[in-house]
Structures are given as structure tokens and as C-alpha cells.
Amino acid sequence: MEGHDPKEPKQLRKLFIGGLSFETTDDSLREHFEKWGTLTDCVVMRDRQTKRSRDFGFVTYSCVEEVDAAMCAWPHKVDGCVVEPKRAVPREDSVKPGAHLTVKKIFVGGIKEDTEEYNLRDYFEKYDKIETIEVMEDRQSGKKTICFCNF
Image 1 (cartoon, rainbow, N blue to C red):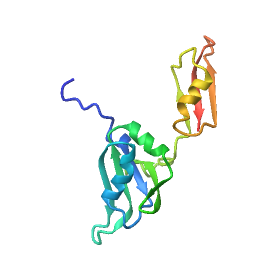
Image 2 (cartoon, helix red, strand yellow):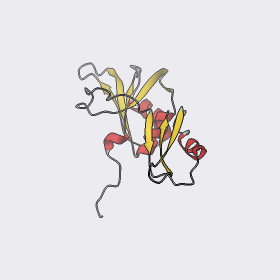
Image 3 (cartoon, rainbow, N blue to C red):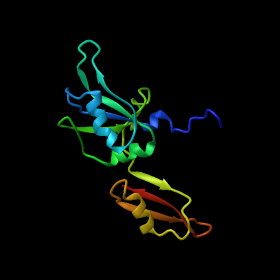
Image 4 (tube, rainbow, N blue to C red):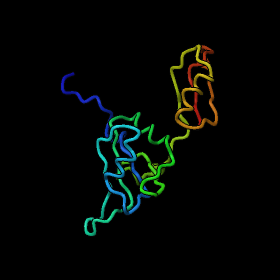
């Protein structure tokens, strides 16, 4: 489709970065986080009157895969401070319970019949340490086509 933008939604490509040093600039934040991909936006939030850093900012990557890479590469240290990246949550959603919680369990469907647990473990361990993988059988067919992966 002509004119269609294939990028994932901006909100999925955006990270909140908390705990920044008061010396952190847009450039130093960009320099650190561009190690994991192309940044389309990078900003340190500042007080409107004093222009002093409010100790947080945002970085936006060109794709979700780069966000995942940055999230897996912790701890992050910018200008001498360990900072905490979190997936950005829209302001209106941030008051909802659990909005900032990290996902620790994922559902995986459509697994090929010949896939073994070690194949799944090898694939998902690049994202985080796996606690358990539960491969489930379909009650009707008896085939193992879904799993739950706990990090």
C-alpha cells in the first residue's frame, strides 16, 4: 500500500529512562542508548523555569526489536548514574494498577510439532533468564503446540 508507514506504533518503541543525573544531556543519553539501535527521538525532560533536568527522559527506537535489545542489556549507566529504563506508558494509562509492571510470563502458540523444549529455551534465553517452560498438550489432538515461558 503506497504511503503506508510499516513502523510499529511509537508507543511500543518508546522507553522511559528514570534516575538520570542532573548533568545528563540529550546528547549523552542518545550516545548511551543508540548502542542498541537507531533512535528516532531522545529527550531529557527539563523544568520549564530552571531548565534543570527533572531526572528522567525518553528514548524512541526505530523498531521494537531494538527496544527489547536495550531492555536486556542492563544495568545501564549514563553519566555515572545507574538508570532504569522502562517501557513508556501513556500518561492516561500510568495510573492504572500494574501499568509499569514487567511481564514475567508469556504465552507462545502455534509451535511446530517437532519443536523440543530445548529449542524454545535456546530461543527465549537471549531475552532473559528462564525460570520454567511449560509445554502444553492440546486436549483433543495430544500435540504439543503451545507453551508458557516464565522469566
